[in-house]
Length: 448
Image 1: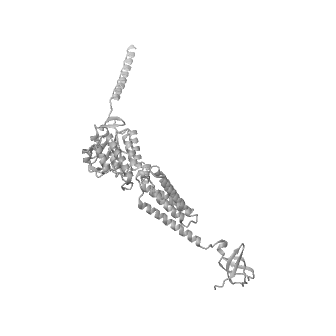
Image 2: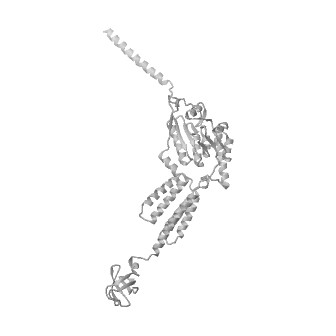
Image 3: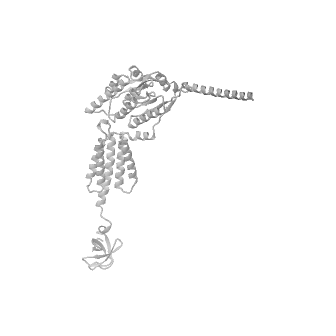
């Protein structure tokens, strides 16, 4: 009996020992550092810098940071864009909570104008073979030179803006100034030699390899980049693409200065046609949608409130022309107000303008519609009434009875009591001279 009890105790001790060993091993293994896989996020920016692009970059940085990404790569190819949007992007990159790369790629791409500042603001700036960077001289919204005092103000600000970015990232401050004042542009090889970018990389794999070991300042702290955990089993980089949202895609289209102007004018034209032809519905629906889209664009574009008031005043004059007998004065005044509002739609500081040919075409369309409406109104006002008491005056009829002072006549298929200063026999043609209540005055028509 004692032997059996002893065997049971020994068996339980052995089981507990095995359990303890397994638990100890698990604790030891859990304490060992594991190489966690960290993907690299990438966004492709191919086009002008707009408010929608600034929102795209901001949201991409947030998405990459929330996902614990090793870095965010902005693959850049841009001809430039709005200075205000560029400032927003640079601010987001400089304050980013994770490393942000700007990679000018693929071959043939360029970082022009605003792209220069975005590239220099990156923690790591790189270019693919066959690319270029530079020509950052500020111009107007349609590529035209800025004249007068505004040119000097914008140029000096842009120089200081580029210089501060270059100094913050330890890049070539002198070249940044030359890129603005003299519009110089350089190749990827020259950019490395002049300390404008960090290195040249043929692809994303080489980009991460060359960036590994580099010290960068991220969110106020010095970080040594290491992308050894961002490679798959074949040594290829783990890349996650960040796409534009539907909202950002729509915003990209409607925040084009000319598109925003067209939406505004299309909205006004649609409402104008609805007022001139009440009940047509379709122009009013399309006009309302276009106006709402224009208002959405106005939230991010630097639009002058005075110019918008001028355009609304012009539209009010055009609508008033439909109801008031101004014979074109209100209409042409409305066209002048619309033209002036179009010319000054965007604030001077933004350097944006609406294409002049677009303004001419739009005003011509409004003028054509106005002339057509005026023509129809004048024609209707000159046309003799065909209904009511006024419509019967001058009409031909036939005497039904003999009219001796009074009698009956048939006009417009109706029998009327009639009077005449001269006697008219039965079945004689008559012409109406006047209407007095339910009685008409006639005379015998002798044109036959």
